[in-house]
Structure formats: C-alpha cells, structure tokens
Image 1: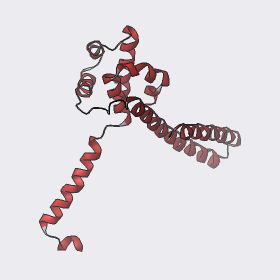
Image 2: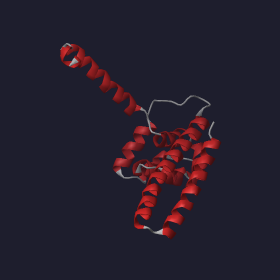
Image 3: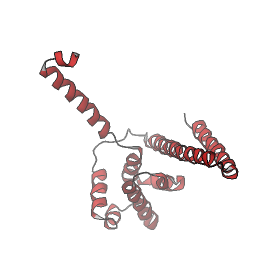
Image 4: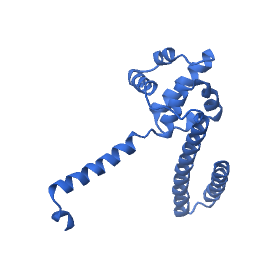
Length: 173
C-alpha cells in the first residue's frame, strides 16, 4: 500500500539504489579471482599457491584452468611469462586472463600474503560447507534406506569433516 502512495520518482530512485547495490556486490572479485590476480601480479606467490593445492578446490572451471596454466608456466621456466601462458589458452580464457592482467584495482602494498591466506581460507571454508551439505544428503538417504554399514561409514566421514573444519577455524585469526 505504501508503495502505491510514493511518487514515481521515489520508486525509481529506490529501484536504482537496489540495482546499484547489486552491481557493487557483483564488482567485487571472488576469492578465486583474487588468487588468480595475485598469481598474475605477484608471480612469486605461485609456488605457495601450488603447495597449498587450492587451485583444485576452485569452483569456477574457467578460473581453475587459468590458475593451472599459470602454475604450469611458472614451473616450466621458474618465472611467469604471461605471453607463453596466454598462448596455451583458448580464446575465451585468453580474454579473461588479459582482463585480470590489466585490472587496475591494486592490492594494499605489503598485504598480498594476508590477502592470499584469507582467500585460501574462504575457498576452503566454502568447499567444506559444500562437502558437508552433500554428506548430509547421503546420510539422510542411508537412513531412509536403512543401510547400517553405509550409515556408519558416512557418520565417520562426517566426524573427519568436522575435524577438518575445526582445524580451518583454529588457523584463522
């Protein structure tokens, strides 16, 4: 009822504000994208990214492919040659890499390692939550099917997942 009493200009400005909030949220890079940007702009971090094995946990196949290519290029030469990395990619992937390479948003100087650590924790936390949801579905199905041995194994798996989650939380600030 209140909406009907508003002037068209008021309704329009509220709609624009809502739309702008969505745009702001969309313009923030994901943790995965931030990791790839760090790899491009600070190639010295690639060995750390590789040791962490975080690329395998990416949800975005595009960003996972880009990060994998960057790791491979770095490992072949001991440094990052973006031109070489670009040459090994499909056209769509090349465009994304080019966009990330020329992204003007900088990182706070001296904060790159902390940003990388935060991104890794966020990616791992998201993966743990996803794994937990899938495991709970399997547990419910095993309960419904009255599969005692399967249920027992799944519950043990859930305990292990909870320990991993506690370890992740313990290591975060």
